[in-house]
Image (cartoon, rainbow, N blue to C red; front, side):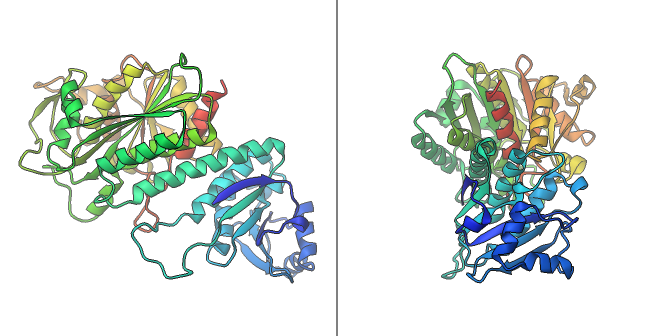
Length: 488
């Protein structure tokens, strides 16, 4: 869906539908009053008869004589309205039209006077939410004629100050859609080679992007023993995908983002239970997230240098698969005792993070659907941020607050490190049941000792269920973080 900005008021709008937000005090602002005139005072009438009260969760579709729809969306108590309220209201409004003939929408939800947010923030949140609501997986399904979504464009009511927020929102929306599309693909399509080819398409689209792909032979030459150990059990050979975006002076050190790209995870020899194993196609959502983030940055042409690294590997059981008890040597030279082959994400990330430091990053962030323990700790509400740094995790968390893409910091205290010590190697790849997300972060920290690094565990936020699938989180948080960084 194309997202644009405009100061055109309802009476001049030629859109098929208008979104009008109303608080529970039922007072109409100038925009709502104008919309009321278009539909012969139907809004006032429905409020008077209490058919619509403005409560959060309410929607009502009204029609002008011309057939133009006016979608009323309740935002609840003005004093209690949060960004999540605006997101939900926008999603409900979109769902009210997405299966109708409506092709174009003028969105006036941002025209209200909010207590805690300026119009630019509301516009951005509403635009991202609208794009999210229009997404539908269609790649491997056959739809009947006329069954596809018809909504093609949305104009956001925005002044010059907010117009830039709309541009940012449109880019974020593109990034989120990229991430969801990749995450939802079946593993027989989305394998390491597919991700490499997808990266080629991105590099061709933007003039200031370049691509490097390390194949299995190159990784063997570099002695990436940890990543290659995970890859041994699969007939789909691994790839290391490196996309570079140059939006600032070449002398400026890049921000580097690394995404876990396990395109399917059986658990290897430590085989996962059968129920819900199909959802392990989502184990590459860290990779999908950095793809989406990269695309959004390229769309905006942010004045920043960015490097995206995706170790793309399939974890399968096989006669040559790595096994519990093996000791492998990572790209850093550090040795790892394998206790569980299902702790494979950290095994590929450690080599990718070591490789990433060759780009001399000013910031290094990895994103991964790393641990089920993170879902136990934070559920599906917040991503987990871990870092030895002080400022970096706060900057990431603050970016999440700005776009309502929540995250929470977990500690990486030295007391947890002893759980991954072992007699037989420099470290073992699991630390036991207690603090599982944290000990996974501790493992990665041993490969990032001299760099400004943060780890984000997105196991609880990257996908939700079979119906919704990949959520596209936390692309919005990551892009907002990079927007903030680019303005420093």
